[in-house]
Structure formats: C-alpha cells, structure tokens
Length: 287
Image 1 (cartoon, helix red, strand yellow):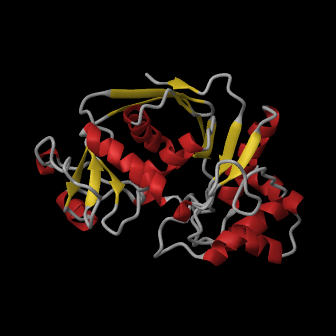
Image 2 (cartoon, helix red, strand yellow):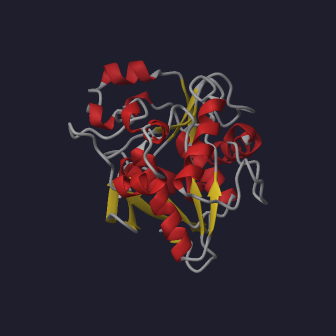
C-alpha cells in the first residue's frame, strides 16, 4: 500500500470544473477544505479544471473565482494570483498529461479502446441515476491482448483505458468517511484515462496535478470515493512515493433527496447572492 503524505507541510486545493455555476454543495465542500487547511496552518491552491472544451466555459471559471471570494474563501496559489506550481488552468497543462500517458503506456497498463460509452451502456445495465457519472464494469472479454498499444507514440483519436488488476483489493483510510475498500474487477473495471477527442480523463488529470502541486490532502464530495481507488492504482504506476490523504464530504441534497447538480440553479451561489443572502447566511446553509 502506498504511504500517504505524512508530515509534509499541508497543501490543500479547491478544484472546480467550470461547466456551470457552483452550488451550495460545492460551497460545503470548499468551506470544509479551507477549514482543514487553516487548522493545519497550510497552503490552499485554486485549480481550474477546465479540460473539456465542449462543456467548460470561461465565464463559469470567472464566476467560480468571484463567487468563492464573495463566500469568504482565500487561496495562495491559483490562475488569478500565480504561484510556483502553475499553470493552474488544466487546459494549459497538456504536456504533463502526455508525459504521464507515456509512462502508463511504457508500463503496459493501458490500452487503446474503440468501444464507445454508448456501446458499454448497451452491453451492460446502466448505473442508477443517482450515480450518473459512474461507468458500468468494462467487459473483460473486450480487452485486447497484453502489450497492445505499447508502440503508440501518441494517444491518437481513440480512448485509452487502464487495465485494472482483477481481484486486487484497494483500501485506504478516509479522513471523514472512515475505512474504504474496493476490489478491482468487481467494484470497478477498466477505466478511461484518455478520451478520443484528446482530453485526459478525470482520473489521470487529477493524479498528475495533485502530484505536481504537492497536494497533501484532497477534500471532495463523497460521490468520488470510488475514484480514489482507481487513482491509487495510477499513483502506484507513476512511481509516487507518497499519495495525498483523502477526505470525502457528505453530499448536500435537495428537498426530493437528490444530490445537487449544477443545473440546480435555485441553489447556485450566484442565485443566492442575487437574492440578497449574505456570505454568512450561505455558509450557515452549507453547514
């Protein structure tokens, strides 16, 4: 098992994706991230996760900076203030992701995949709508022979998947949710690390950036707990000596019990501001 950050100086991060306006759930997670950072007398980093050119918009990135400042959050490094680990916009960090892709290729743990998400969802039952970002288990019989793709010089216009070590148990102690354990090939299957449109997948990009920015603790929503197991596999192959600690926050839900989404505009920070609520009132709502 990989060792966690240990006694290194605390470095936390806020990492919004500018595909819509931030809502009360984001506020709850980011406030918790700042509180944990302040308690450790650490450094907080703002990272704009704007990789998807089809869904990310610069106005939402600016809204995130403005709304989180209004809410009372403060960071020491970010796209608006610079810092030693920039650039802090993921759209400007493609060389780092390509370098990591090449390491995974050389290690023989990834392979090119021509199957689409639609094919995968049609092949197996789609996940419950409450876990709509999840992906069904990739059928092992769809895997190519070991070594496929190792002669590729660049990702090209195909998806790339990480070949999980079937049956391996990946365990970690979550700072908020307690002991977590997942079995590769059962709880999750081969997962995307690179998309056919040239965009690195979330699992790869956050590992690369958290390593490069020396993040010691990742505070994020509980819907991403399983992602941690996948990411620990990537950390290991990339040769990380230490991984961040992880703290997954409970999700805020609406009156119907569904978790908030960016389409929940009634509880967006911008809407709450426009209704005349104060930062303190929104902080209280988020807690």
